[in-house]
Length: 561
Image (cartoon, rainbow, N blue to C red; front, side, top):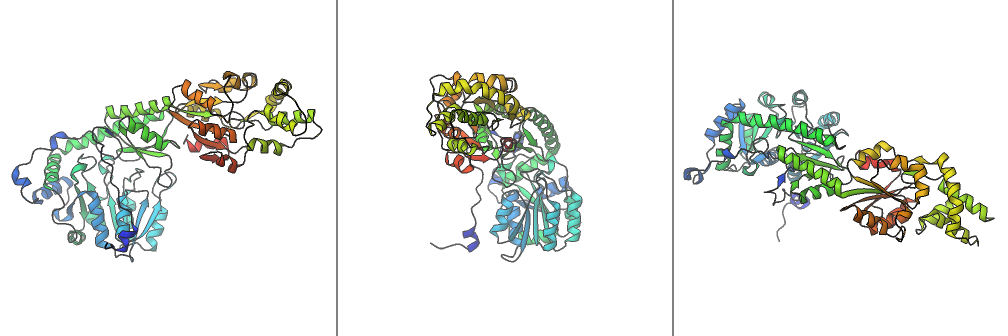
């Protein structure tokens, strides 16, 4: 088989959105879901049967934008515009191009495809443009800089004066600003595209104008630059239907502006409702926003899709882990999204272990075991021996651990006898020494997004005097050892399976600190998060932990609380 050029061999194909989206609530690709059905009038045969003619439409578009016709060029969507600019102005393997990251996927795709030496400048931790780093790259020499404003997926905006200053300071750089969402922001550098000969502005009819299926975009800028691009563009890349529909829309552009304004009002109301559910959001400047789901982002997207609501996981981008992008829809569509959020919570749980996960028991239970071994044996117990025993699994119950440690010292005693002696000693030590590992406020926030449960090897007499007042108002239920008679303890998954069955859960996450916790959660089909409070990370991972945290309070980051 004949091989393509090396650049094509080295690059992955751009994968457009999957089909099968019609008939569902499309909040995933920033389309205007309200739409303008009246715009797609039937076409006469002379339009269908003749190659497209653009002159009349260009005149109408020129008047609408208040831009001379010679500063306009039509393209088959913004994608073609980006490709034409990259192909026209980049010398393969020689010229440097710059963009932000993350950005519209076709920008780096086409720059790589044409062989640019690509510099991608990551956004800041606040998901804004890193202007200082962009300028540093520009000072090193850049042939073409392609930036979207508002950016997709972050919604970040570059101030117009920044672009104007760059055009003046870096005359050898061609700046290309993709303004796909400008109708929702009303910030534009279009006037500067008429002033400078190193600035091109891209626009599209795919977003606010609600015609992404017809693929109509445009490039605005210096006629000399456009002339070069016209040499590359296919002569009839824009079809006749898109011209007719866009022309109808321009005739009633006041309705497009009104709908864009109404969408922003719906967006503000929707964000407020989501924030009341204790989800953090990043509003941005487009017809979309970022929902900070955290570790369950992919699962939440799949769950919503199963209910007919399409949203888009953006976790694969560096700096956007756990973030979902959501397009603002109609009031009805936004209501369906809110229903998905509520339904997700009603069927998904976070189940915590108690000891050394929610509560630091290193100076209570551990101290009790050490004291009991001392009382019944002439060989003192070092805490490291206790931790090693737990790490091996099978000794999640501290009274069982005590019995085993004494057995290794040739002392025979029953678990019941040890518990009878140990509980009063433990309660005395616990009242003075046990501390929370996680702030209650964090748990309260998490409880708005998940159903919370505790599964502990403690009996009620060891739990209620110390922690019931703190945890019972936050957790839906606490399963103590004596609440599940007849069920084997961890590492068996039976108690966790009972929690799932009793409460009609579809699944969730388990957070614990021991090898037995991990084995139990895996057996119950739960995602496992471990905290390395008293067990080596390697043991926890080997036992099935999908993630190991240093401290229990680190869940705040994982759930973006």
